[in-house]
Length: 92
Image (cartoon, rainbow, N blue to C red; front, side, top):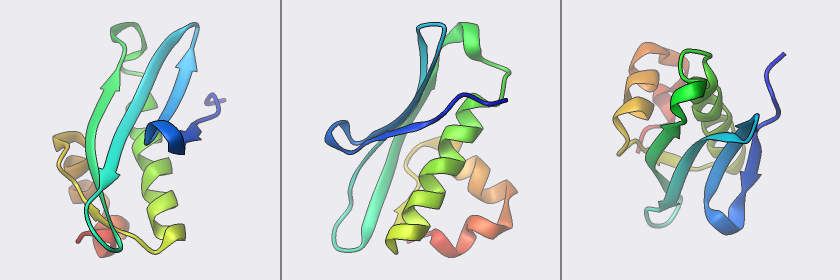
């Protein structure tokens, strides 16, 4: 079972913490109706567990629910969108 991913709007990020170590995606407004997914990070001890991809998927689902278009400044977000065609309609 994957740990619960939290949206922290005040910090403009999605985050999950496992055994005190974080994985997160930071975002910023990119103008009206757009959000820039700027940066993802997964603590070294958590890498290889799919947590980074899970955080990105949660952020993409949020953007869809909010009716936002996504600017994938982060290479990792861009790679996930490229691999998963169901997210391409979200691109700004």
